[in-house]
Length: 270
Picture 1 (cartoon, rainbow, N blue to C red):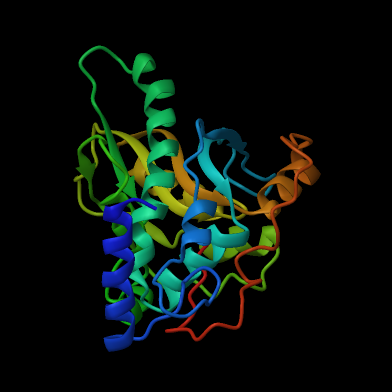
Picture 2: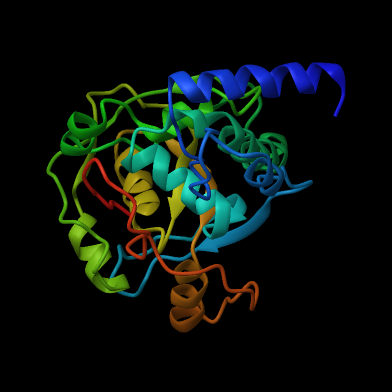
């Protein structure tokens, strides 16, 4: 450890006495995110790619939505994101935002060369429900994007028309039914815009596809989506329904399979 690192550690030790904290990733005392967990939040060289397919019960003629993601929803990324979303631990936004930035960058590299001449791609964050925003006081995805590096201009214009049921215990078809028609475009704010949707965790993709439907009804063109992480349920569900399994690697349970950490209140929307 160099002199700068030693000084930083000494400062953190002093703050830990005044403001006791535990690691958001593993629970170790005295660090917001300990050295081992920071080492586990390694920024990948590339983002993986997956096609979110619309199930047979979805809208007729709807096509798949390309998704770029950085990591699987497991281990340290899962714990730190859960702490950010359910315990107000915004100290995890910076390392997780860097991971999301990789997915955003790869999506831009793939999409921008295909845009019509003169068109400009913009990001559109999946909205929080009113209940979730009241509980947290912030949109977790917006918090991550602040640390995601260079990115296109941000568009706004989606909101929940109604609050869906908690999705944690729902199967794939139930999630589609639960979210169907729940999101709407605000006035004509999205008309003529070219969009990349942004989310934190993707399970079945129901939320992203519902947001695409709403944005396109509002006159936008949605080219794809980028997310920090995905769960194994994405691959299992799409493999079972459409035979498009990308990998045999298993990343753990869906969003409902969380740890027993204290929560601010759980709203699972995808």
